[in-house]
Amino acid sequence: MRNAEVARIFYELADLLELKGEDFFKVRAYRNAAKVLTSLADPVEELRKRGSLNKISGIGKKIAGKINEILSTGRLQKHQDLLCEISPGMLEIMSLPGIGPKRAKMIRESLNITSPEELAEAARAGRVRVLPGMGVKSEIDIIRNIEMQKNRSGRVLLVTAKELAGELTDYLNVLPGITVVEAGGSLRRWQETVGDIDLVVGAEDAEPVFEAMARHPRVKRIVEKGENLARFRTWWGIDVDLVVVPEELFFLALHKSTGSKAHSLRLQGLFSGKGMDLRPASNEEDIYASLGMPYIPPEIREDRGEIEFALKNNLPRLVDIGDIKGDLHVHTSWSDGRCSIEQVVARAKEKGYEYIAITDHSQSLKIARGLSLEKLKEQHREIQRFNEVYNEKLGGFKILTGIEVDILPKGGLDCPDEILEGIDVVIASVHRAFKQDRDTMTARIISAIENKNVDIIGHLTGRLIGKRDEYDLDVEKVLDAAAVCGTILEINSSPDRLDLNDVNARIAKSKGIKLAVNTDTHDLKRMGQMPYGVAVARRAWLEPGDVVNTLPVDKLLRYFRK
Ligand code: DGT
Ligand code: CA
Ligand code: CA
Ligand code: ZN
Image (cartoon, rainbow, N blue to C red):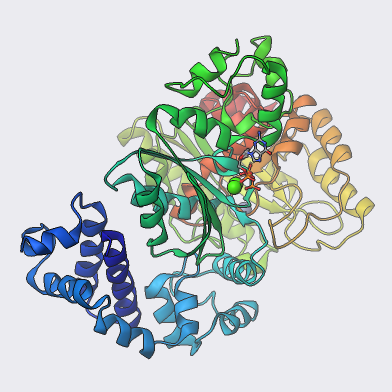
């Protein structure tokens, strides 16, 4: 029996025990044992023969006994018993993205739910959002993921695919014999949704890699297997293509896997005869250099002009996460966010930002606990006070006052102009009455664009990927208005929004519009999602000069006052 097979039993055992509510230390011990077994260089069978099972660090006497049982009988009775005891529906719930044993247990106990169908129903009825650690977003994710598993043909959000790919690469990385692992495909190009995960592995032998992968706890079964390529189906409903090549061919294989198909075909067409598939390369720069081109970043490998620009050596210098100096769309517990101003500021400083704008919701957005005008003034006094403290103590970090003001269904804004005038950052967004006809919606948004107090339009099209379409809107006309008025458009980094998307953001740039890449954070986790928005900006060919929150704070404020 292979190490990975034994490890999988321990992984499952840990999950099942956690689902039952078993002692945390026991659960952790089994999980650790599984990790140790996966990264072991020697076959565990050999170690047993040598009688040195309990000399492995991380494997105690009890676990050594269990390994013994598995190796002699091919199974572990305790594991089998638990599998019988726990309903298959609970196992499915547990293996949903973002759930896991702990949450599955909580869901069963607080909602009395034991199948994914029941869970989806509860999420639709709004009964999941009230559970600890859950929210409206988790409900949407649950519904989306359960639907995706049912009709497995669907695409998944990039953020979900990245989480799974991260787990799988971490797992493969420590396997003996594997020198390098990376994800290619649409995931590496940061496409907003992903059809399947493509992993590229550098190793001499493919077979042991396939075997180990087949034993990963997330993997359900092998779909097909060739000499150096295999396809796996995971419990999350996402398929994984795994390519194994000798180390010296790794970068060629990664480049090929990254695509896009259109980009690769164009390269092949242009350079057929140069034999680009044959030469080993020590990095991707060399591959492009051998074709007489500078390196083309994965995000723009879409055959949208990048090859022509590269041949003329005038590719844009794409904006990078390191260029971002602040986040201009942040919610706190003053409205529907989870954190205090202090908490988001502390995190912003950790990220190396120089400023942050606190933009809670305006008064009439009751579902998001919008701030009354009194509360808003109080918040701004509070921010004023913080800024004084910060200026003394923390070297110039700046908290900007802000608001995310609702664009009312009839046009106009949910906050008087004389108040907006005194606020540093005014974001205007549509949050309700999504079903208006095209002309009404277009005029409604343009009314906000034309208001001279509005700095930024938030999540312009209102789409939630895989959940809600964009509302009916003449985007071209809206962009023209924004260009005329000098209104900034947001790239919202929330992985289910990514709004503007790459295509619209590129059109915006071509019209001379400036963009702001914001997280629209409601909790600290989402504050970390800036890379998703930056990726959209990169896919839209944006340079630092196109993105206002790459500016230092004094220049930013001067820009807003214009
Ligand atoms: P996806 O999975 O639909 O989100 O998008 P990709 O781009 O990951 O596409 P996928 O998984 O079908 O294929 C992975 C890469 O393999 C793709 O980006 C480029 C390469 N590839 C696939 N089919 C072809 C092909 O027919 N010709 C060439 N040259 N490359 C291909
Ligand atoms: Ca793919
Ligand atoms: Ca694929
Ligand atoms: Zn917001």
